[in-house]
Length: 198
Length: 198
Image (cartoon, rainbow over all chains, first blue to last red; front, side):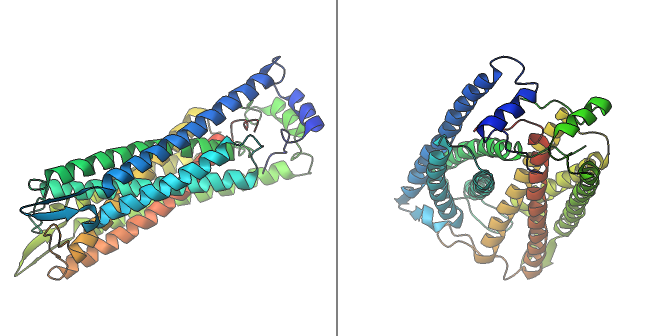
């Protein structure tokens, strides 16, 4: 069901384009190319922004530990926060690599579009899960849970909870960026296919 | 950038199809329609399966409470499990409604494709987050966390933890179904658009 690659090759590409209603409107092909350059720049930026945010969230959480007269607590004591650090690390690395690939002007091939689409989806799920479990653990450290005798810890470790909140909020901004990136990469992939009959 | 709706109307649709390379291959248009009917059936099934699974996960979790000589614990004592029940309820309702819409043979319009796409994405995120936070809470009830003085509860409430595990595993099967549904609905939406130049 893959479309004939009418945009890939020169002469037959031009012939195919002249049949389309878009090409009848004067300079629309050039406008399309300009639009595409703009879109590629936007996509590259949208991949660099989460890279910076992931590094920020990672650093804030990595440095998050507090000691006082009641004892000490560190991010590494809580599995969810350790997972948040790992997820942000993976996400920063992937965002950097994918920004390089997205910035390249060469025509997008089918395997490249599929790879970016699948990895964007997986990263969105990973970073969303990290944000969700960390929020739950932060909620429990704030409120505790009487039924299973878990005590609230944020009363004694206020600074720890404050930094964890900052890191989690940054992570959710990353989630929003990745939701947008998933949309862009699915557009780039599936617009290459023919629409189903119905 | 939306494609001309060459499949939507009769006569001009046939003329447009005869120019496409697919239509030159004999009966491929009929094969396409058959493929599409098959795909629509598959999509409807893929929406009914998570409906059944959501109801199952919901019922297992709703009935999950245990009392013994050490006290009593119920799913409603833990925020994450309450969220899991709500998420499964919403997901079951949406799966049912979207299955009806997906089963209709009338041509898919742009607003319908966008609505299904966005709702599928949102539901995937909701149910994934529910599965993730419940897994984290289940992990904590199993292992506890010495650093923040949370004790393990599964030693005394084994049956409670067992049922929670069952419900969470079913929820992750729903997540897998919804990941597949997101893929299908993004294909249905973005295949209606022209591919970008690069």
